Amino acid sequence: MTTTVPSLPDRSNDTLPIADSTAVWRVVRTALRGHGLLLLAVVAAMVVGSALGLVAPWALGAMVDAVILGDGNGRIWRLGVAMVVAALACAAFTALGVVLSSSLFETVLARLRERMFTSSLGLPLERIERSGSGDLISRATDDVDEVSSAIGTVVPAFSTSLFTVALTAAGLTALDWRFLGALVVILPIYVFAVRWYLRNAPGIYAAERAAMGLRAQHVLGAVRGLRTVHAYNLAPTLSTGIGTHSWAVVRWVMRARIVQNRFYGRLAAAQLIGMAGLLVIGYVLVGNEAMTVGATTTAMLFFLRLFAPVDELLMVIDELQSALASLARIVGVIDAGEAAVDQRSKSEELELPQQGALTASGITFGYSPSRPVLRDVDIVVRPGETVALVGSSGAGKTTLAAVLAGVRSPDEGEVLFGSVPLSKAPESARAQRILLVTQEVHVFSGSLREDLALACPDADDSQMEAALRAVLAGEWFDLLPDGLDTEVGDEGYRLTSMQAQQLALARLVLVDPPVAILDEATADAGSAGASLLERSAAAALKGRAALVVAHRLSQARTADRILLMEKGRIVEEGTHDALVERNGLYARLWAAWSLHR
Image (cartoon, rainbow, N blue to C red; front, side, top):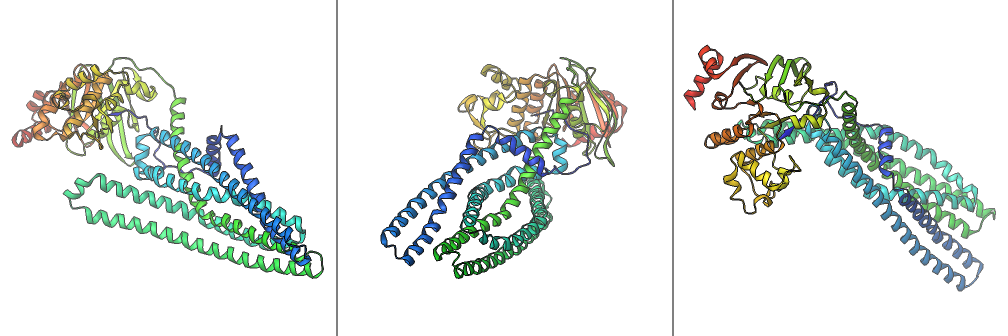
């Protein structure tokens, strides 16, 4: 069962948007609200841990001076104990900071994931189809995984390295300001390396993620159409296409690795130059008796301690860039979904009447502006009337059903329920007035009761059972081991195609809309179950205004009125007997159907 989803007419952009840095920071800042104390605890733990990390190099330098001055073993032992205690405390506070920061940012990611899921459900169906479902799925899986992985690597590196670098640089300056000369020498190299990397890496990572999304789209398309692939032997062709897109991903991955290696080479050069500079400065200071050997040793150890977090900090820029590219794609979905909701909320909203005719006037629609599928279509479905829509494959029947249900917005013309335009009615009201049941029915995993409750949360067990029996599903329902508590879906009792369609029709009965649209909802029953499913559909539609996209002309024959579509237009209209007597296109279709059924 598919309910109406409002859609936006703009088709100028074929991909879901990618948010800029301002939008990403805004969304992350919103997700951080309410976690101020936890963020403060992270900062405090990291500052204390970094400060305790300076004790060991200071103590080693003091030991060198103690040995040179002959102060004895007592001081050395005291310094050793201080080193051990400080090391244990440093490890404890650092671990605490990493745990707290991971907890904080995993919570933020969970909030972003929830917002993304909610926002994606608010996106118009045609918007998702234009960009390709693979793009959205890639953002919800690959990109979320990329950000989650970064939380486990980038967050600890940043949490520890930033504070370690800051406090170590302060300690180095406290020993002698001239040691800053080594930092001044290597700083331009680091700046150059980072700027070069940031100039080249983001575009490559964004292209890599986009290529992955395109590959996912083609793989999903092949898997979803597996029966068609086997029927027409399309596997070689589709495999070639998937292979082409996979190699495109490989090429972008290789470009990313080349950029990484060049970046790491620049970092190694900075480390070499920095160590050489430090040795020169230390040699001069000790030679001029401006500093003790122990203090110089401390400075050297500080400097060595500085390099590790700096390199770690810069090296995770690689993962950070990839994660930021993924985060921008996630926020892009959030912004697009919320923008669609805002646009609908700002539009004029009119209440729909409880009953009324479904009227389409001058409907023109195309998936691309240059190729209209529907051309100036006029239709009226009156209360209590069943109208059958027939025609050859590709005539536009399914597209028209989607436009009438409000799933798609027409390029021209308007759809009215009663006298109210559907485009100006609240989404919740539309879902209660017009219901679309398609050929592709999804059975949700869970109990049968939970599946039915998705359509009508207020329905009790007796109403659910009555709905199933109303659509002639009582025979298989009575055989279920646990009745409404029976687990259905992929992990439970597997419903046949016919049973799944009856379940969808039972949902329709529970919602009880005045207008129902069946888009070939009985097509998958097979010859044996066709008659039963057609009777199930007739029972579900009783008393409603109904438009039935008929796969079998036997179903169209019982309709109050038949519309014949050809090339996006209504070319014939009338009752079955009148159309057969007219001896037009419908009469020829009926003759062919009668001959081969």
